[in-house]
Every structure is written in C-alpha cells, then in structure tokens.
Image (cartoon, chains in turn cyan, yellow):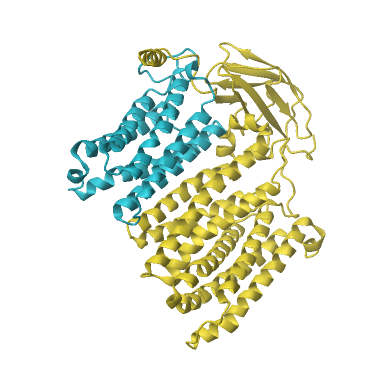
Length: 193
Length: 434
C-alpha cells in the first residue's frame, strides 16, 4: 500500500527544492519587486504549510520503527506550524518580526529529529552520511532566521535561508541507498537486487 | 575544505553496508492470520541481511509455554526461521521476534496467529499487560485536548456566532489550535505506550520496534492512523480559518472533528465486546461527543468569553445554557443505556471494579449536574431579566469545568477497562486454556 521510501523522499525533496527556488527568487529580485504581486508572498509559507500537512500521512503510514514515526511526526508538526506562522505574518495576523524565530525553532527541532533518528556513524552508509549532513545543515541554518529577526534588511540571511532548502533538497534526493542516483546499489540495501 | 568535499563525494558515490535498519517484509504464518493447520516452522523475511541469536523467534501459547526451537538464518541472511511443535487447533499463539540489522540496531516485533480461530490483536499478545494507569492518563489528556478542540469550536459556531470581537476570536482560535496540537501529540504518545506494552522490550529497543502490525491490524492502531490524519486536517483547517479570516472553515473542522471521535468509540472496549451493536457504538459516540462539547464549551466560556467580552456574557451564557441542557440530556440518556448494556445486574455496580468506577463517575457527574443546575436556576433567570451576572460566576464556571474534566478522567478509566459482563475472547493472553 505505502509507496517506496525513496519515492516519498523524492516527493518531499521536490517540495523543498521549490521552496528554496521561491525564496531564492525573492532574494535575487529583491523583496520590493517580489511583493509587487501580493500572491507571491503566500507562495513559500503555503508550501511549507502544505509540506507539514502532507508529512502526517508519512508519519502514520511508515511505522516500521518507532523512531521514524516520531521523527516524521515532529517534522510534520513544526513544518505545519511554521508555515501557519509565516502565513499569519503575510496576512498581518501577527505583527512582531520576532515571530520569524519560529523558523529558527523549526530548524532546530528538525535538526534534532534528524540527528537523533540516525543512529549510525557518518561513514556507515550514504543515507547515514546524508542524514548527518542534513541534521547539521539544519542546525547551522537556524542562524539564518535568527539573523533575519535581528537584521531584517540584510540580504545575506534571506539568501542563506533560501540556499539551505536547495542544499537540503539535493541531499534528500540522494538520501536512499536504493535510489540509483549518485552511486551504486549496496548489496545489503533494502529492496536492492 | 577540499578534503571534506572529497570525503563527501566518495560517501555519496559509494554507499556503505546498508540503509537504515532491516524491516520485516513478510511472515509465515501471516501476521494476524487464521490458518487451518498448525505450521511446522515460523518464517520471517526481512528486506536486508540480519544477524540473530537462537532466541530470535519465540512462540508462546496462551499460558506462556514456549513452543519454538532455536532460530536460524537461511539463504542470504534475509530469512529467519524457527521450528515449532505442539501447536493445536482452536488455539491462538504469540510470535515475538528480535533481529539485528547490519547497522547494529536490533529491531523487534510481535504478532499473533490462530489455528482454526481468529487471533486476538497484538495488543493482547501473551506477555502484554493491557492498559495501565499511564494509558488512562493518556486517554484522559486526549479527552481534554479533544474538548478544547471540538468544544471551543462548538461554542463559537453554535452559541456565539460571528461576528465576535477580535481579541475573543484570537483567544478562541488559540485555545482551539492548542487543543488540536495536543490531540495529535497525545494520540502519538498513547499509541507508543500501547506499542511498548505489546512489544515488551526495553525503551532503547522500542525505538526500533516494528509498529506496523499494531498500526494496521489492531483497532487501536487503525483508530490511531485515522484519527491522526483526521485531526491533522482539522487542526490545519482551524489554522487556515484564523489566518484567512474565514470562520466558515470551522464548520468542516467541527464536523470532521466530531466524526473522527468515533475512532475512540470503535477502539475502546465498546468496539470489542460480544454484546456490541450499532446502537451501543452510536450511544458511546453520542456520550463522548456530548461530554467534550459540554466540557470544552464550559472552559471556553470561563477562560475566553467571560474575561474578554463582557458585552457577550449574557448572550453566551444563555445560549450555552440552552445547548448544555440538550448535551446533558444526551449524556445522561446515552450513559444510562450503555450502563444497562454493559452490566448484567445492578449488583455489579458495587461488586465489580468496573461497576465501582462507574459509581464514582456517576457521583461526580451528579456533582457537576448540581453545579450546572445552580447556574441554570439561579444565574440564568437573572440574565434573562436583563440583570447583571452575579459576582463569582467566572470562578463558578471554572469550578464546574474542573469537575467536568474530572469526569473525563473517570471516563478514560472506564473506556480502558473491561465491563464484567464481557467474557475474555478466545485469546492468547494468560488465562485461556491450553
């Protein structure tokens, strides 16, 4: 019934890539130009909210380990809430720029979930390496929303945040050992023949 | 930096020994199956190589007799089997397995099968103790969270109606969203606790425990999956209603929220009792929905309307009073019907632990009803005459809410308990004859 794990990873990687590209577009053209079409401002928060909602089925349908269910559940929750907060900021329901820190919290929780649920060392396998890399990338990237809250006009923070999602998308695309991308199949890898 | 990039490139190009840990892809006999003849061996198939100890597969009878021999791996190390002897028709058996993936993680799982009979769910496998006080607390927390989510939405839609002051609206949305998030988190925690009881492994091993049979083959698991998805959608709708200023979105959230509460009725003891019928399940659901609407409405009235919208107090109190009268009537009627259905005789009220818990619940419900009656007969007439509400009404509403939340605790205990009239199913839990 459940789709193969790598398909699910690729689907969410595509979502992250789109998220990163939208954010990158805003950084490249500048916030004023980007905001000339108000609907554009809703794009990435809506996508983040949608990714959060769609992660719930992943949490409850992939239950072959408790740890994975808990990790997927925590990502679903923080992504949904972060998307909601950003949408509320765009709509003017929330005013304080400090709400941007919710993204910081989201990245920290996501990072912790990645690092805790990957119990193997870095060089154990490709997926282990990438899980560690994704976890630490998320941890380091938490500085970008913090910077945005402190210095909203500085483009560096926005650019860093946007590139974070592009990098995460690439890593997630090649996260499965069984995925025939950037490497060969391991003879032990699940499903590989 | 170059060295780090080179290492990263190598790691990406040449994957290591495995991906994640081994997952069970199939078993013989199949999980939760009813088979005609006794198998000679139990066979587990994994999606990758595993290493095992001789006790990797253990098969237990209902009385706890171990019937399996030493486990061995076959072929490429993805198949594990153990011979079994002494299995008899008309009995159900528990299979407990442990296997270590090539990543060093030990996965574990449990399932049951029956020979000539339907097996019980894994939550009732040999070795599991069934719901304990921690499950009662989790279910209570779930009820309270559900009351905040559904009850607050109900008060807003059925009593207050739009438009309402912005501050009040925001607080009601906040309370509802907190309820939604709590429902999701408590639901997950409750499911993991049930899984821990079924698997009977240390916490570290529980982290790699296979929950699939529990999530797909038990009423609790199926309810968990459905309710998590349902209440995630409800929470998303509530958040969108707030963000987009579209209170109409609360209607589908309310309807879906009430609908998915059936999961509690179908996954509790009500769903597995021999005398369970469509009517008893309907009554159980109505009882629950009436209770959460009543409790959640009271909490929202006391913590949101009273302090933030003095101009709405009268309208809200009188409106809620009318709705609460209907809710209490449904609550009492459905509860009485269920008590009659669950107890074989009146004496079971004091001679069984279930009956005693029910008596305590009825006593506390009576206190809550008396408290509500004071509001109904003393506060309501004053408000209807256009007079101000007497002092202390807010504190009184909080007191009634606290009593009502206590009722939910007793309800949680009763939902997890088995009524005395129910005979144990032909199961594998200790007590059934071998």
